Amino acid sequence: MADKCKHDHTALLGRVKGEMPGDELLTDLADLYKIFGDSTRIKIMFSLYEEEMCVCAISELLGMTQSAISHQLKVLKDAKLVANRREGKTIYYRLSDDHVKTIIAQGFEHLLEEDQ
Amino acid sequence: MADKCKHDHTALLGRVKGEMPGDELLTDLADLYKIFGDSTRIKIMFSLYEEEMCVCAISELLGMTQSAISHQLKVLKDAKLVANRREGKTIYYRLSDDHVKTIIAQGFEHLLEEDQ
DNA sequence: ATTTCATATGAACAGTTACTCATATGTTTA
DNA sequence: TAAACATATGAGTAACTGTTCATATGAAAT
Image (cartoon, rainbow over all chains, first blue to last red; front, side):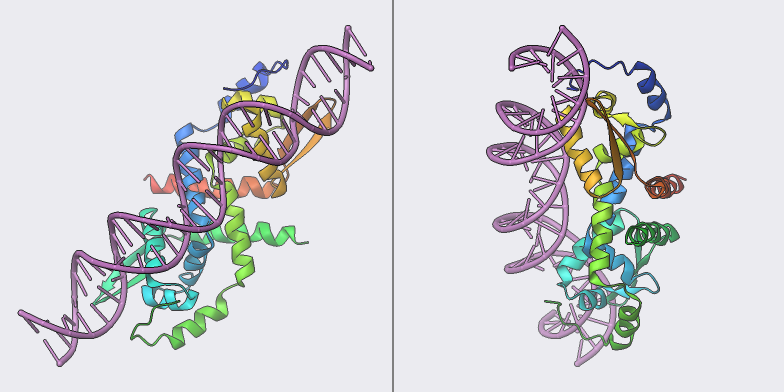
């Protein structure tokens, strides 16, 4: 699978392989970032940054259908990035974790530094 | 586009809209995370965490074709997440920014906390 | 009980993406 | 100059993803 080249990488590869986390963990990490990698989901998470919101409020805020928002909320909930509570017919969503805020803030910092 | 509901969200939406960054910035943020959301690219970035590597070394380390790695390195370079230098026929890649490390580390923290 | 309202969900479709294969580019060595 | 080597890149393809549309679920009100 990996193409051959004439370099001798044995020492380097030994070192790097030792430091690398396992495949499974790296895949999990990629899957986590995949969820942040969609503007609709990012907007949903930003909407919930300060306070909880019901589905139709998010839908109205983002100008998207309730169905589209619900589908994405499911993705976010499966990843445990948001949680919800029911109050009658209405379901309120919130960020489930302060890490979500930290991750978003970190990405922002990167973006803003780049602009300089 | 957004479905109607009987709730009155005017106050809430006013507040949240004021706090939300612009659409363009949120899209840029999603695009940044999109790049982290692929296990091959994550593995490449981890490979470069401690020291620079040439393309064929990465290819050998990950057990993938040189072409596949080169394609992904281009994505990473276009996003300015990696940089490279030439030394004869060989091209060495490195992380272009300490932010890359911070972003990865942040995601890891989230994953590890979840496991508890 | 039936209707209304808020949300969830399955199927289908269009757009995107990551890899493979073949080939091109750029550098060194013979 | 030609051959060998390291890397880059375009086209093609299979798999994935986000939205829409239609419908289902679950709770409250009539």
